[in-house]
Length: 639
Image (cartoon, rainbow, N blue to C red; front, side, top):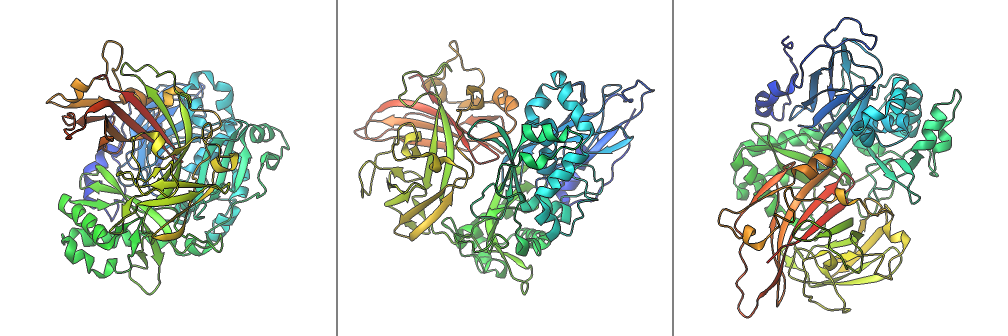
């Protein structure tokens, strides 16, 4: 049976991309009719909706299972709008259904989100968003992803998805400030089944923009739902809900899920002033795309009125921004919808306001292919057209602190032994850029939340290195994790407060008196499983990773498809080949395409440096998760 044609509005920002991908997004993954769980005659069952995290999650893979774990098919969401439509397969599915969507949000962060469908209808809607994911987690009492992966054995948990009402009502109490600001009625708001929903800066879409939602574990290993005002510069979790306790209470006739809230705040704060004007943000994207389409060169863009408010952004100057946009024009790329990602204010006087919200947008070709991500900070001025404009965060140099873990493997893929810090191990990366704003930084200090200061020195790499000598202006890099990593196991100055989400670090250097950065996610108390770290397909005792393979004239194809399939909530974003020299280390850094599972490396031969020799070779893979954690794997290359 052929599927019915699908007609939908196309984004005004990327009409060409919509035309090129529209057919692929309508239907897909079909095959076979469906019936109800009682075995009535088969009927066509269609599930549709939008995958969004504020902005659309274009190109997301959407899959569906029923209450018995039967696979009902999969499809791909529209590259621009995030819409999907799927004719369910499998004969007579058992309800409720569990939906999973995996993709990259507008900032390039990997997301794995879930939604549910309680009962059967001929045409059903499941919008897959961070809030639908939170709702499913409350109903299951645990993170949805492992349940989806083992759905055939989780029938007892899946049954809870049939009665979402109480959990939905509870979740709305946690975000009541945003609902009030956006004039959304808690009694009528459907968090996952609204057929009219679109990721287009409508009130319901801005609800997603306004919130930071995550599923994590506390210090005792208990699973939590964490919610917060996204436009806080600290990126703190304001409300914490114990998932197991919440499910227990929800299953009671007169249960009180509020007892599961472990935080002082019982509802999130809201960026009231930003939300009042947030609907106009996409006007900026449309104006930038119009400018890009004119094909102006970098010099002309530098003086254009649309960029006049831009100062600097982590060392990126106006000339750099103009060159970036000119490059988009040369490649016929444009920007998808913007998404709020945080607040760049170094001092925030009120939770209700943010003077410089940070934003990101996907960069797309005319065929809808994802090419990269654009990010900056913006400001609002009602007298301007468009009212939102690019400001940058005003920082002369970028500074960030990142929770990171790493695994060391030998050339045959076996874990290395004898490492003093353990394998795997974890810590906090201090990422102070060495160059930017037309200057090079030779040293800095970073003060930890515990009050200790860590000296950093220029080591000829992108980031300053931790220095063993106070006040030194240079250091010799290893290009390994130790260059920037503070590990609780080996750094005596580190305490538990230094590894919590929202922990504040201060960098001081010649170009800034005190530059803050906050830890986006806590450092897990339990090290990640080995399977979480990126690994290459095919590396084994009989197929070791060798220097000769990397130096082959045809290059080396690095493939990580197996790891990617097992970890859809992670994205591999960097490959590095490092040569350990007798004088200092040198590296080649390669960036895979967004969402890629392989990368063709160019021929990589030994560096030729007078008076220096190669002592060893490594290949590093780096992956990131939605919370900004890094997972790095080091292969020791056989020489």
